[in-house]
Every structure is written in structure tokens, then in C-alpha cells.
Length: 134
Length: 117
Image (cartoon, rainbow over all chains, first blue to last red):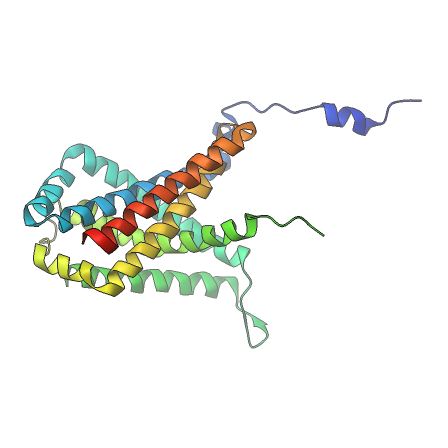
């Protein structure tokens, strides 16, 4: 009698190399998408520091703008913006796969769903830009 | 009966935060991180910006966006560490640290937007 294969299957723990996600472009894209979380966090912190500077008065606000113009922060924010855009595009494109929306019993086509989210993104961006500098 | 967990609730916050981060954060970072500091656009006066931020709708909206985006980031970063660096055995520590950081950030946001402004 041979031991059931599931017995060995339970003992066998496949070990993945630490850098498994460098092997394929799709794996790398996945990990980069996951890493966008760090930059989402940083952009929230950055905006909160702006709010703090504004609450402290005109001089603190000006100092915040000057500091934000320093090369290191500009570089960090360029990278952050790239990751935010990557997050936004991948999130919008995934939505139709994660969620089925029905209108009057008909499924909204995935392209229409993604398209309406891109439209919402555009409108929200335009509205916020108008609020701030309009 | 299946054991009840927090998972569905966390995933709901995760998607809400994902949408909030996607719709709101890029334009704000483009404006305040690049366009205004680098002078591509003339920065708004301090008084105007303060007035805008003190509007109750702005306070509430920003607080919701910050809280949701932080939870989203924390949840995703938790699995980034687990999968990317294979730290699954340390999930309890990682989850506590990630959600804890999101909570601290949300408290900071609430203090700034509701008290300090």
C-alpha cells in the first residue's frame, strides 16, 4: 500500500524565491501596482502637511510652497504622481471585472462602466482644479 | 455557519479608498506637489485657500478622502509585504502596524481639519 499522495502534498511547502516578481513583466506590474499603496499614503501625508501649513498662517504656507519646490521633493512628487496615475488607471480598469452593475435588468457593458469612471475622474479633477485656482 | 470576519468590511473600505484615491489624489498632488510650488500656476492667496479649507464641506470631504485612502493604502501594503517579501507568518504584526498607521494618520487628519483649522 502506498501512502496517499495528499499526505506528502501536505508536507511539501513550495518555497518561492524572494524576488519571484522580477521574473516576469506581469509579476513586476502587479508588485508595482501593490507598491502604489506607499505613494497613496505619502500623498495623503503631503496634503495634510499642506493643510497644517495653511492653518499656521501665510508665512508657513509660503514656506511649505518653497520647500515643496526643492529638487528632492519635486523628484519624490513626480514619482508619486506616476504611481497615483498607475493606481487610478489600474483601479478603473479592474472595476468592471470586480463589479457587475445592472440597469433595468441589463448588465452595463464593462467598457461603459470603465468609461463612466474615467469621465467621473475628469470631472472631479476639473472641479477640484477650479476650486483651488479658478 | 461560516465564521464571521472583518474581511468583507475591510475590503469594502479598500475599494472605497481605491476610488477616492483614484479620483481625487492625482489632481491635488499635481497642483500642490508640482504646479503651484514650481510656479506653473500662480498659487492661490493664503486667505482664499484658508477660506476654502474652512468650508465644512471641504473639511468633511478631505477627511473622508484621507481616511479611506489611508485604509486602502494600509490594506494593500499589508499584502504587498506578505506576498512581495513573503512575510505571511508575521501577518498579525504587519496588519496591526499597517492599520495602526492608517488610524494614526486619520486621527492627525481629523485633528487638523476639525480642530486646528
